[in-house]
Length: 166
Image (cartoon, rainbow, N blue to C red; front, top):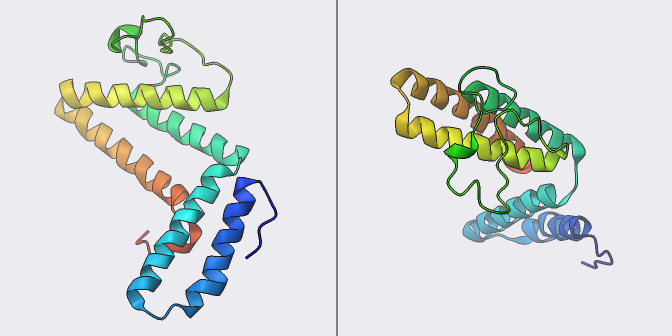
């Protein structure tokens, strides 16, 4: 294996290809073969995380917004429980804290907005699990289960998806 690139995604892709196409077929020990396939899976996951893919970022934003809407943790969701208030987050008034008001439309940067939406969701989950009634908890669990199922399908590499039950 010769790697001439300095782009991390290209380097990882070359390492993954070498392991999968040259090394893996030659490994005869079942335990070693399984370990090697797990390493290839990890490299697949790293490749997906180091490559800049605007469509994946957009998809992650949309899925997070859908979850936030279902949990009423999105500033754009109408109603009395519409989002996380600064008063809900300890230290939110500290210098440098980045917790928007419930009616904040976002920064305009999709990655920063994704991070903030996920923080809002996390805060809403903390509040619901600590103080929610049974109906609210059931709806929350259903929303998180649906999100997790979709997110897992997006995060698991193509090589491993064939082994999953969904």
